[in-house]
Length: 208
Image 1 (tube, rainbow, N blue to C red):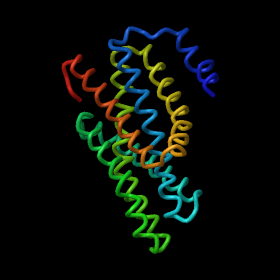
Image 2 (image 1 turned 90 degrees about the vertical axis):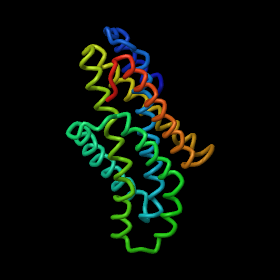
Image 3 (image 1 turned 120 degrees about the horizontal axis):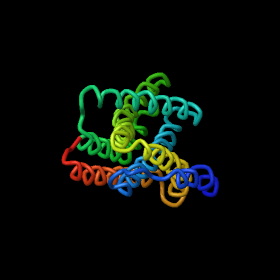
Image 4 (image 1 turned 180 degrees about the vertical axis):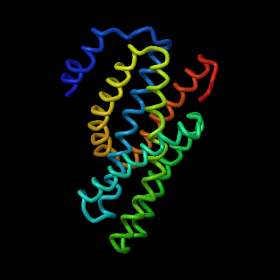
C-alpha cells in the first residue's frame, strides 16, 4: 500500500512541482495531521457504537452517514458564520477527548434502551464531533488555493495518503493499546494541526 501511494500519488506530485506556496512544509504537516486524525476518529467511533447498535454493519452505516452529513454542515457553517479555526479546533479536540473517555460509560448505561432510541442517541453523540471535523480541510484548501493553485494537488494528495496509512495505523494502535488511545492520538494530531495553523496565521498576520 505504501508503494502504491508513492507510485500513484507522491511521485506524480513530485514531478508536477510544489509551486510557490510559502511555508510549504507547515502546510504539508497540517494536511497530514488532519488526514490521520479524521480516519482515527472515524474508525474509533464506528467501533465504539458497534455494540451499542447491536451489529457492526449498523454502526458502519449510521456513524459514517453522521460523519459525512454533519461534517458537511460544519464546513458550510464555518463559512457562513465565519467561525475562526483557532476556536473550532480546540472545540474539536475537546469533543474527541469526551468521546474517548465519557462515551464508553454512556454506552454502557444506555444498552438496555430500544434500538431506535439508541440510534438517535448515536447521532446526538457523533454529530458534535463531526460538525467540527468538517472545518479544517476546506479551510486549508481554500487558504492554499489563494496562495498557490499549483500546491492544491499536493495538499489533496498528502491528506488522502495520510488517511489511507492512518487507517492501518489506527487498527495497529487499537490492537496494541485500545480505541481510547486511538482517539487520544487523534486529538494530539488535531492539536499539531492547530499549532501549524497558528504558525501559518502568524506568518500571514491574521488568525482565521
